[in-house]
Length: 242
Image (cartoon, rainbow, N blue to C red; front, side):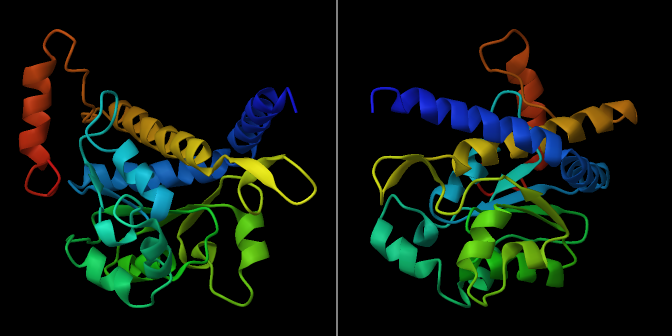
């Protein structure tokens, strides 16, 4: 298949365009939750297991990103120290409470939970845990994927205050290779786009209220070091990863 690369890029582009249209209301509602949290002095937590943990790092300490973002990172559910074990761990009931207990989630905060399939125990229970702490949950998932995979299990979409549907297909891959195999996952690029769309909207909403949007500047730009230092000092006590 000589044009497989172009098929992948076109599929990704189409899915992103579709999400921009169909998820605009959900993005605005998620941004409103984040805006309120930031205005109250809270932070925006981000959590995912497996490759979805990349979303937590996507939002953390980067040029153009919000300084109030706190990634929830636990090696037990990340892929770099044992991918096979991680797959088992993310399906283990009771682990989410242990991971999230390290982070003081409260009613003044908001939490993103990313899970393309939306049915693994840890992300679903992370959302449930956050809600017991009074923290509103923004679930970013694929409704088509989670519907196909649920088999009677509770889905992330069922326990989130706002659901953003990435539109990724069941199984995530978008390019048929043969009659049985498809390649080309899209959940990461769709998730990153949805996350940044929400955070950018929240920053704009804060500015419209006359409040500071705590956005990091590129360290390579003039005046950035002092600007970023001030933001780090503001949020250091809440973010164990600074």
